[in-house]
Image (tube, rainbow, N blue to C red; front, side):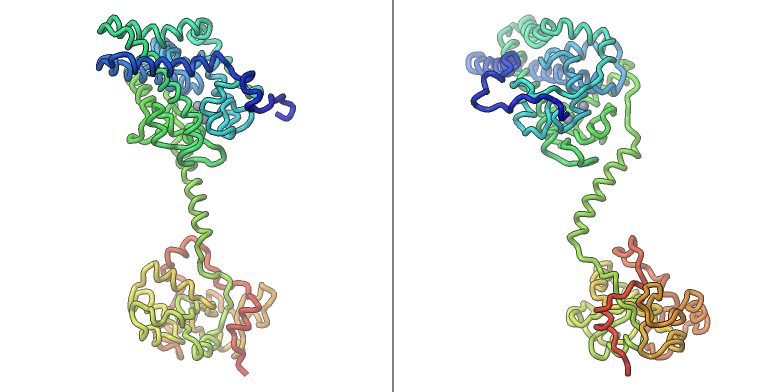
Length: 484
Ligand SMILES: [Zn+2]
Ligand SMILES: [Zn+2]
């Protein structure tokens, strides 16, 4: 790409020499003629209905034919269907199938780069219509269309494109309206010219609107987006994020309620045996893309939320009780919480908390007194100031260590206590066996035999709770009160 020769950007001074006059004529003449028709001719109902039908006929020639059949080979079409789509597409005056598909395959292969013929990165005007009006600034990316050159319908359409296109765009509507109900002029100005303006901008909207407005449902690496409104004016091509992710899929909209008349037409051809081998990407892959994007969005939301602190000091039962004399500490589920700022706001009344200060209130919190909500669990989490050594009052810890010791993970290297200060799982089980349902001494209100089996609050379920985290030196000095 670096070696690619690029023409200088179009400016007011080089404007005229860079215009592609033939393309410009086909983009400017139809709206001008349509306006003339609206100002000078009566607008017959039959012509109006026919114009709308012809709009769908030629537009679907592009979306079901040029795009999904020939550019992406998303299904196989019988010869009659191919001929019909080749004629209909020619009536949209957007170049031959071969030329159109070559550019479109480059658009998919080099999306948003200089090699993309209608890159959205060049701005709305350029991707909508500028790329047709002005000569290309450089060569577009390489794309293989050898499969199309072997197709005789594509070949003939390309060879006689000018004749076929003018006939389908203007002569056919002129004759149908004229021979049908005597409105030759209306057939030309309305079903021919005005209809063509709408078909043109419908297709152009896929390159501009569908790359700028909407959702990145399956991928946000590139510009294509899913947008219901764009779909309405593009025969269902507005689910463009899906399409760029799964281009071989004959659908753009995958839900039954999403507007995709192109998909419905292909399905109809299939149901009467005129089309076959409709391709669908595996649902698992589609859901995977969607899930990835949803997780990314959740992650962004998560970043703005403060979650409970994970690195907390491990505090002995005695130190917890000593500290609880000075501030409102309550042990719940192995964590020590400072409830000082919350006591008066407690919906169940201040007294319940006051009674629990210096005790293990796990059972009370988890349903003994009241089975708290997820919101209460989350709020409680924010009041954590320490982790209770052993998860509760453990007699063996008291026996093995000095009265002012902090029990924490000796692997952290910062420990001043020996390994035997930590109660192992088997020791805890032994204690549970020894005490049964009886509350241990000095632990008046709640006794939790195996704290690890208590239900976790929703916000903690996906995280591994560190029961013995590394110690933060500054916090140790604040929380632990050495007993002399
Ligand atoms: Zn695109
Ligand atoms: Zn495409």
